[in-house]
Image (cartoon, rainbow, N blue to C red):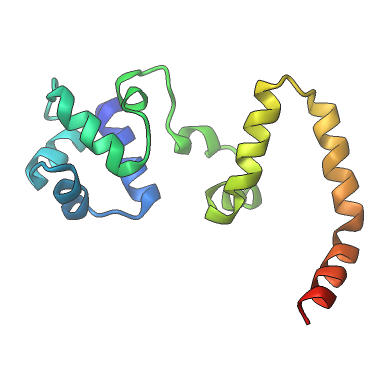
Length: 134
């Protein structure tokens, strides 16, 4: 499997989209998707990759730049708990916040302090939130 094909297939699976659905939404044939995923298409048309990227919710550059790794490569050595957290849709705001902190050059030690702080009070907050709801 080519790097391009691996990225498309892994992202498709991550998004829970079948070959048929991806092909239909991207405006290409199922055979085209299959050929891409299996490395049988070396030079796909630019529009094809752009359309696939749109359907899968990523920038086309992700598929075209071999130096960008797949999410699966990134998380393969992580603990099961961290993998589940990262792959959970409800975790996206936290992931986005972590990316913003990284871009703003917030130190890892400072982020760990925030996590420890919130961890100490999480049970109290759950009770408060429960009381607010009922």
